[in-house]
Length: 323
Image (cartoon, rainbow, N blue to C red; front, side):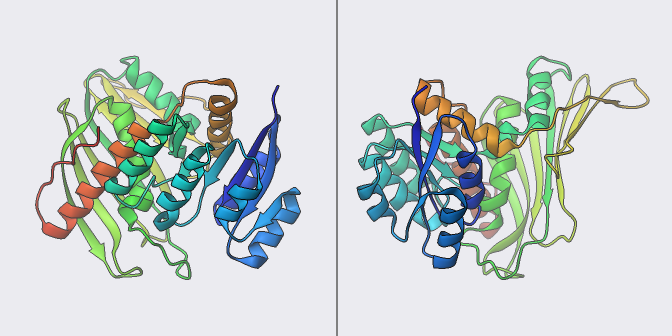
């Protein structure tokens, strides 16, 4: 098995990428990059990787096969394009970019260069969401009528975000609902609260109308003291609900119409990040299909741009074309 040399840019959440990659068979965490000298020294030292303060210098000095871009979202386009130009496969943490326009430029560059590009949509690798999607796609709840997502948690006030709650957090649920529903969103409407903690949207309540006729609703906020991660799907035959506030104890319950109670479905816990990175490595090293594609990242960005526009204008918005 060929050893893959991988780098990580951005060691906030990217420190978790570094940890998982350093423990992965057939992978060598070759280099890490961050402008915070203390954080860089700590992560590089913990995993025996070379440390760089500048991603361009890292790409020039290291012969990398793949790169994880976990820098702030405003830097995603610049870092991803530099890696693509160097012929390095890229996993870009969510969001793929702060806007659809930037995402389109990244996707176009990767396609033209023939370089694998995978958006970091980690909930695709959550075992509760995977089993929910499998059962919905198998028809266990019948035709999908409604999807409801809740994602609430307090934000760390000292951390300044560079994208709003829609692009940072609701994007997870937009992608999950689109994947489970198996179709595209034709229009959205949203209301938001802004300026409570960050200078933009801190909380959003949104409605998504799918081309299939299914309706999605989402509640996503940084303002709640309670951590909630939940996705439910109502179909003509019943209801299925996934809970995944902690990946170590996911839950899934199926309640057919006519049943007094739901039935708990056992879920084997796994770390979604480890599964995501294993899938990325398999695509780069072995040519396996990308389980999350550039199109998935662009579709989610189009919907999140539309939700933000709707929240700011008070009007329904049709997501912009992304193909």
